[in-house]
Image (tube, rainbow, N blue to C red; front, top):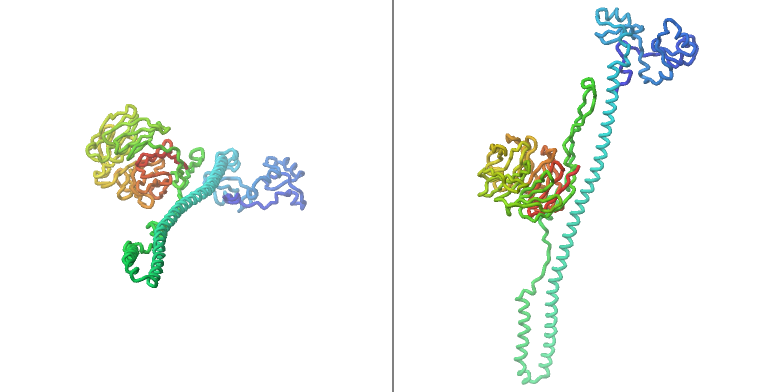
Length: 580
């Protein structure tokens, strides 16, 4: 900010007088402390001189102020003089054309052709209550307030960064601990397998050793007996026992041959066949994750009070940073169904699911108990329209290629929109336009009020996989489970962005958006939920198998409660509060 010395008007000179001493006495070589200050005379006056000054005809109407009060003025402001720098004369005229004060000589020399000249007294009269001075006061107060708010905002950002660092550090440590614990479990299991394998094979070898040692002892005894027979038995005795000895020896030879031919002498070798994912662990996993920094501008709109009679600083709402999102599990429900393909949350909080194999719609109350279920010819995806009406698509059922409009209070189909094509993922816009994925025939639209049909894109979206769709403002976002991509386009199918990262998202199916346009996607084959920023530039895995995801296929973000409904294929569902 500029100092008061920077506000010198053209022609102003800086005052050289010593305001602490009486100017009149100083001319008489007397040093006396001044008690008042005369702005017209531009000098201080002592007690004696102030009386004369107030009575003198030439100075009785001068403006004076006590020195103690005068000292409260900023030092640079005190230095601003009220005399013409060029002619050393008092200002008497103000030239509006040149916007400057003038002395008489200035008027003669430089302003004699200026028409709009005013007496300086008329110009400065009431200056303290003028609009210009009030504007300065207002602006100064408002700038001060803005600076305080900016300082507070930055301090809060510093504090939040510190908390985020702490929270992320804990998450990283938790992930590391989880990985280590899992590896420790695998390690212990493998060591137990190693012990079991070694003990099993060792037991076989020890059993054979026992048998061999018995035979070895028998052979030694046989050899010893044979030597004694040869030395002490008669020929007749030897002849009579020869056959028996041959039979006994033949059994021992058979024992040896059975060991050799039975593979009992094969050497048992143990080795470790490491899993491929662990073999390439150091190569495939190049980082423990990534730190995402969202540099989202804090948009400030500054309006001048001169234009709007009030100066205010308005902070434009910025989209939620996906780096700050926290998933808090509120509820886990087993709905007892198979092949869940679609889900939604009704305005009253009930949850509705489509069961593709069983061809039924199931409604669950807030407390997790079943409200009702009803059979349909076919059901794939689901969305809420209005007035207790939901739409249910038929999927790839060849026979039932239509959209069902179901009254959930009357629990019956009130209308069918026969389209003659596959109808997979679908979403209803605020003006009751249904956007759906027709697989081979692309992205289609139909007006639920008058059944007017339209097309966003012709041609196959996903030839052998399911496609789901959602919408935010003027953009359509849809999945391609075959290519593992998420694409965002406008209603003219102009591409806005595309996301693909098989490390965190494989087999994308269910898709939904929050109030800021951030996109939530199910990864059925990766067992993950990934959130993608509204512009497609940032992403973050927020849920995985650690939270119980096993082949998740459907999800729905409820914008009124900021909650996320996620459904596994086999019927286990979760409700998370999405916090920031």
